Length: 220
Image 1 (cartoon, helix red, strand yellow):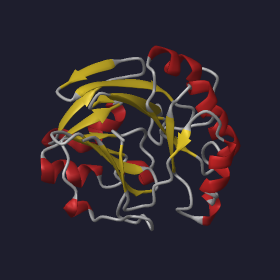
Image 2 (cartoon, rainbow, N blue to C red):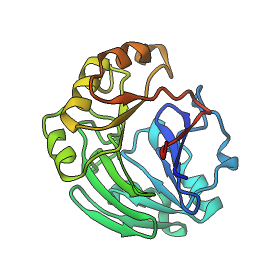
Image 3 (cartoon, helix red, strand yellow):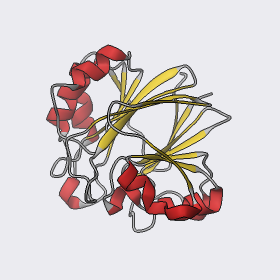
C-alpha cells in the first residue's frame, strides 16, 4: 500500500511499505508539525530548495537514519562529507530501488547561492506523483503532465510566496492530474487559505484535503 503521510507545511513522506521517501523535512519550528525529527524514519530525503522551511531538519535526520539526500548539488552538499547524497539537476532522471525520480522546474528563489528551486516527479508503488515544491504557476507544467500521466499532484496553495488557490487550480488543469493534495498553506497567517475554496475551483480532478498528522492511501 502506498501512503502519503502529511507532517505539516510542505513536509510529507511517501511510503510503499518497503521504501520511505521524505520531502522538505521542516519540523523544528513548524507550528503545524505533527511529528518530531527524532521520530522520523526514511530511506531518502528529497529537498526542493534551501529555504529554512524546506531544508529544515534534513541534516540531522540524514545523520541519524543513514538516509540518502537527493537534490541540486548546492543543496544536497549542505550535509557535508558525513552523509550520503545523490546530486542531480533539472531534467535529470534517477532510477532508484523504489522506481524513479525526475527533477523538474519550479519558479521560486533557491535560498542558496548557485542553486535553483525544483520539483520532483516520482514513480513509486505503481503511481506517478508530482510534487511542485514552492512555485508560481507556469505554462510548462503542461509538458510535465504530458510526459507522465500524473496520479497525484502535490501543490502549494498558500499564495504570497507561491501559487494561491486560483493559480493552483489552473495548475491542476494544465497538468491533467487525476488527484491533487494541497500543501504549504495556513502554517502562518501570511499564507492563510481555505482549502475548501480551492477544492471548489478544481474541475476534473479529485481534491484530497489532508490535515497535518493525517495519512492518505494513494492506492484507493
